[in-house]
Image (cartoon, rainbow, N blue to C red; front, side, top):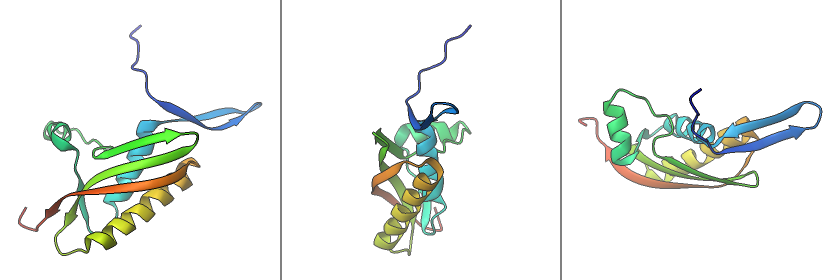
Length: 127
């Protein structure tokens, strides 16, 4: 039998008689990526050169441009995103921070310590 790759996971709920709930880090990153891209003014996530290669292959990477760190049920999120031209970068960034933190906390029960944003580009309608 082929051995599967070891994924980083965290126990988010444990009860002796019912078992436990374990969430992979990648799931938290996907939640953050979806919440960020659903925010008005965000054009896309920026995953660097490797993310672009994956996109060119037709594979949708929902965690592209997202890095997370989880320790003792506390999450730190780093996002790299492209903003649509004409939107206020500080306002879009604040909305992304709020939406990502709310999505992670409500879906996983983990506590979000911070959501750090790097604006990698501004996308015009011509792009």
